Image 1: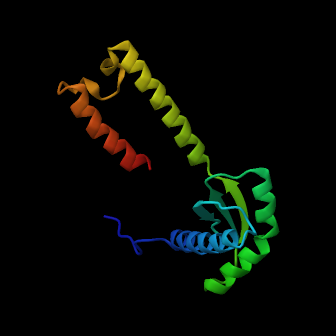
Image 2: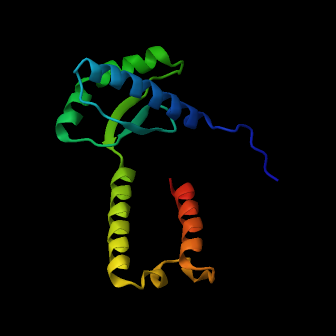
Length: 150
């Protein structure tokens, strides 16, 4: 058996704290009308802790420009609130998971509307061949997919 030395690796902890610090500071800046309201979905710090990508729920060009102007301020805030050797250089990107989730929802809506109009929708759904009926098996599989995928 392999034994883990820590429950949470350092990079994961740094990601979580960075996300919290940046979300709070961006909220303060949004309240002061310096930046538009944005939602920080996650942060990924590089292995060497010199750079970090901040993923946002949405990011248009105007918002990206404003965030780049405030990048220095945000990095100073991170440096003052966290005790790490180097403050990572921040870059901002739209979260690809948000776009993928929107696409999945769109597909599910199309599938649902096709089932309602087609009338025989249970046969094409994966996992519905268990013999206990489409509604019973679908419900359990949906919960498993959401827990594992999100």
